[in-house]
Image (cartoon, rainbow, N blue to C red; front, side):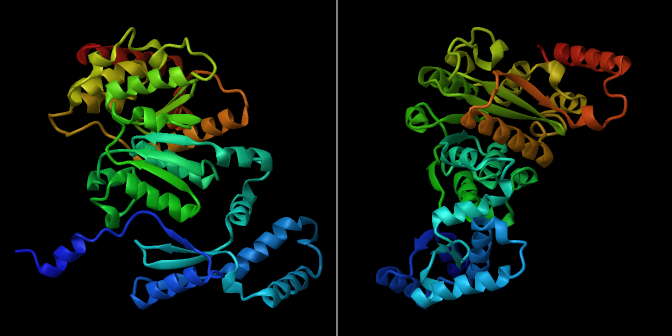
Length: 392
């Protein structure tokens, strides 16, 4: 029998969004004091002076390496303290799932400091456009790596996340989340991580996943859609909706240690074929209700069996025999996240990026002799045999 105290804890919903307070406002100060009295705040973090120091340096780069910089900052800090107590500057972010209160700069200054080391790999103007881009991510296995890569680089303050599943232990070989988040809906798990990176993020979640009934709402206001779902009929609906709204679609697929990145620029050309034409004149009803094997077979056809690594081919043939599902690696998920974050930045800052497919192959770069004719011929033969066995 389950102990009563455990049941009470298990039923407790502590949320996935932070609360942001301005302690110069009496109501906010009272609210934080009440959280502390109620033992909701277990500890606080305050390195605000260091954040101010970094901001001062960024705003005055010409004096950073000059003698006397520390004295100049100390004078600046003293001036701020004369106006009001330091705890009344910036904002205090309360993370209920951590029981933690964190003192941070106000949003504009937080953005400047947090993205300062991106410049000028990403210029100030490009960074603002990247941050203002509204991106929707459907599917949060590989999709969570995309969301974290975007947020890490200072992209997409406004983000939509769609996934119906909860985090399972088998997901944690490729999803950046620990045992403390097992059983959480992936949209909430991912939201927490994003908010920890950027407390000022604006996240809309779709815990029912991306379905026919919400796809139009999901697309509203988006600049880019990232497709990382398994449901093939919805994958096609994403492209139909993207064509109608002239929105680019990005998709990343695991492939052993490698990644396959698809770019479909419906914003530039509404005549392009979904999935680069790999599935032909396919209809939504043709893709609806496929089982795990049907999904795996169709995705393999979509990606091209010639692009699938040999170990992945072997694994697909072992589904339901010696393994439960197709394998995925954490490194490949991260590689997809990197690739899609790069493509998203190119799109929103207006640099050239064509519709197409790119193979990000660790094997090609690191395996000796990978590109030799003999080894390529062998891979081609293995792929032909796999395609025949897999019924493609």
